[in-house]
Length: 389
Image 1: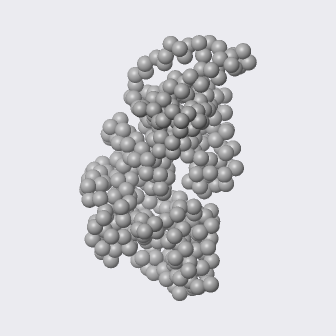
Image 2 (image 1 turned 60 degrees about the vertical axis):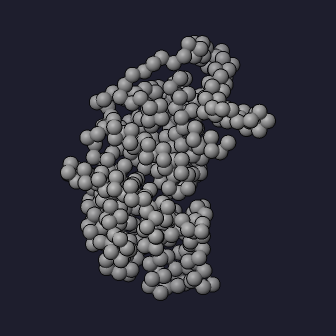
Image 3 (image 1 turned 135 degrees about the horizontal axis):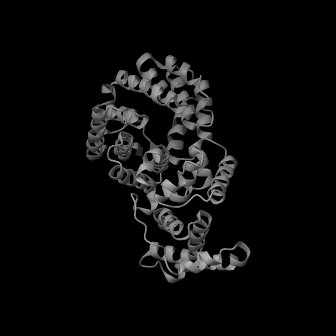
């Protein structure tokens, strides 16, 4: 059931939004369908086509609900029209899930709401998971999602394919969505990582002249190439300690080719620069061969193009490799990223390298409090034990 939910939740919601034109109706109907599956499948067996079963059941439950609410909410006409099926719709975006991303990224919504809502509807992430991705409390994210849905309803934001002229203006929000979906997948949900790469490939076909689309795809492919070496015996393996023979050379070659295409276009953006950083890592046969000076120059460029606290944290890591851990720690201590587990994990590592064991132990404890990933916890726990009581 969990596998079916992860694989089909986003598509089912996307199809139902297209049919009904209402986000809440679609999401509630899909949840009702999965609840029905939990009741029936253990006794009846899993149907031959689970996705079709979920979508059909969700559609029927939505129709029943709309009919019950027709007198109160004035939805009778809408409910009656559903039996005639949804009209065919032509346009630039033919994929239901991609269409849902563009709809949730409507300019009437704040950027954070666009990304959060799409993660919720497309990936089926819980409110807590999305809150961790945004580094905000769960209650704050719950309110943000409620407001986003209300905005779509009250502003009558349509679920439709964007016109060709609208696509560039929606791109930044869509890319942010895709990248956050990928990061959730890289943290343990393989289906979301694959879905993010698939969506980005579709975007690349749709907008082949947009270098940031190519840059994001390159970034994800290069990061994904290291996944086979990232976990060993249930514990996270740092980049410097990974067995590079396990890296997927096919993904590396494709990602590096995309980076070269971006360089030819010469319109640098944040995803392209991050892809270039990962291309430098993938070029190094060993950790000692890593060109950290080149990586630092790329992060300097990123801080000009798209300065963010997380980018500054990554730059501090590069500074620590080029100028030493003291220089890196000074930069890390100036950042306001207290909710981010990597902030504490990086700070702990720098303190460990400086021989400040007691302070490192406190930082490892702070990192452990802020991650729920089992592999990360195993690594941090081992490092923390090495710092003594």
